[in-house]
Image (cartoon, rainbow, N blue to C red; front, side, top):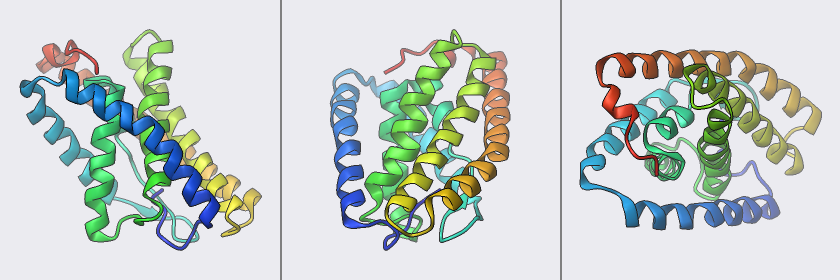
Amino acid sequence: MHIPDGFLNPATIIATNAISAGFLVPAVKKVNRTLSPKRVPLMGLSAAFVFAAQLLCFPVFGGTSVHLTGSVLISVLLGPFSGLVIMTSVLIMQLLIQHGGILTLGANILNMGVIGCLLGYLIYKIFRSSLVGAFFAAWISIILASALCALELGISGTVPLKTALVTMSTAHILVGLIEGFVTFLILSTIGKIRPDLLRLEKI
């Protein structure tokens, strides 16, 4: 789902970077004000897990790929703003290995951070913060993120919009089910082994 440089037109690049910044700036301020030092190691471990999980990707078309994101998982554990900060940090680190573009960083943050973490967490809360809710949130959010990615590519003229939407959405329906299952499995395991982690304040 990472979009490399050269795949979005200037207008889309400016718009996605501006929208992402509009969500990211208050998220960083919120996390900085309220973050306990005890949460830092868990945030680091979460970032490492997401970084590794996203490297297991498979090409779809036009330079894009399908992979797990871990967005809902980290948001359920630490909160949506923490999740957005972690996802942004991961995406920045992945630039070092050319996984995603510098100019398209805002688009990737929007797709996997804003949609994946913030909207995914909202969907999770709608399902009353249940494990089943986490499954559906992970599944739905990754489909929505892929659809937005396809829209960005289509608007930019990289590929026909209809082709992008059908290909990306279809591929991520299955990936979303896998993401949902992995999210459900990890959270249920944590609930049995370290239930206190699920009771951490959500930031």
